[in-house]
Length: 288
Image 1 (cartoon, rainbow, N blue to C red):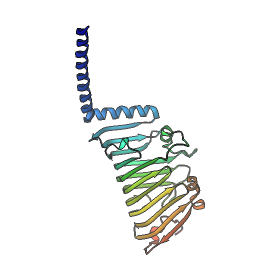
Image 2: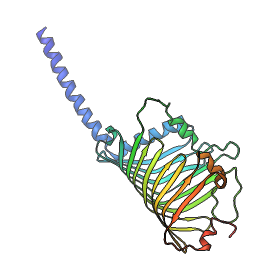
Image 3: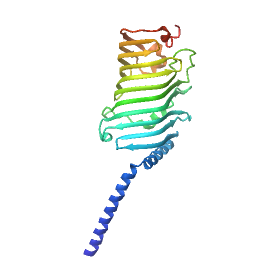
Image 4: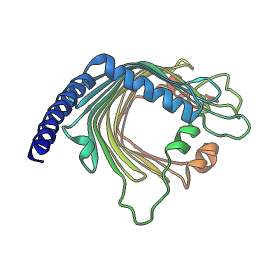
């Protein structure tokens, strides 16, 4: 019996050593570029099957366990049109951020890509609704408020398009139902979300709109919730205009009010010393 116990003990010791060795090999393998990419591509294939929409990730790098770099990451909607396509998505987290509550991310940067949102011509459904439905969770009245934060958000050379196919396109000026912004550069600081409230600081925003309107620079402190959008310390440089406002707000009842913007959304603004060009204003007020 003692001999059997020795054999069992020795075998258990050897097995434990091999398990430890295999664990170390696996831990180092996961940190290698090919293994990370393989896992990411398998995950993308799984989600594509689940969502019935194409999701692709060409490559992934996980750096020091707190940085994730996705290369050529794309999502198509269920009509096989590009919803999201980015050359690089780089996320930096605080150490052990995934185990913290609330979750706070150090930085998120999106580079060289496009985001295309649209609404169905008959139902008005957004082309990303299938994503919202898949990840939606049942509301728990006793649940703690959802809190989430990102210290820095940066967009570099990103195109943004929005089309509400229920509405015809305007011939002149900025069309709020058919927006096309190219070369968007954006820097946001201290983004915080608590349930349906959003607070953040825009340090810089610039882009070219397809109407011909050029936004050279925009900055403001922003507060958003259903019923109100408020901008403080607003500075706007566009074309030949420089606008400064202590306060600007849009008041409404529900988000659906934006479907009838002119009738249901009330604007309030307190403008400071500013220079306004009628040529620039004409992009927003077609009668000028």
